[in-house]
Length: 148
Image 1 (tube, rainbow, N blue to C red):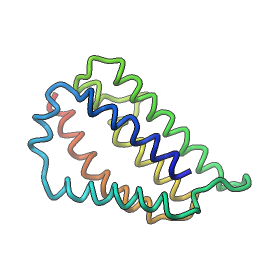
Image 2 (image 1 turned 90 degrees about the horizontal axis):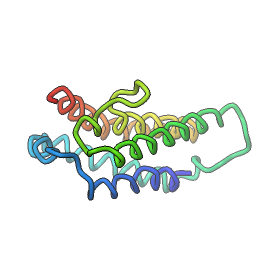
Image 3 (image 1 turned 90 degrees about the vertical axis):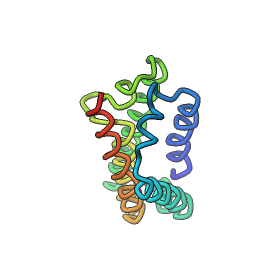
Image 4 (image 1 turned 60 degrees about the vertical axis):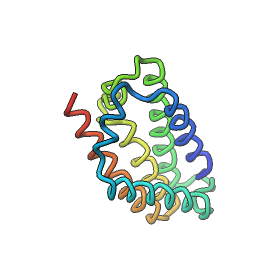
């Protein structure tokens, strides 16, 4: 499951490099370099954790499976966020705007999905690593959104 989650996370982000938001470079140039470095370390660490541990693989259905189901639904909503963005005019509002009442869905949805995946696999390390990388992204996203 970890590999599938990473595909669901990385494919839209790779496509996004071709369709960045208008004025996005203005935001990036003002980012804190230490926080950016921490985000990257967290992303690499989470990627490694979900690929190395087999605790995220499918298991016979149990009450723990509900965590996986909810997590997967969040990743599907994350995909909907990207579809909405790619069909839009690629403005910062399109990128940082809420979806189904979820603020900054591009930052929040994968964090929650990986948290629940970590709970499902009983590997909370995945959550902590992703949380620390996300915390920086969320703060920058909120600052950018408030600046619109």
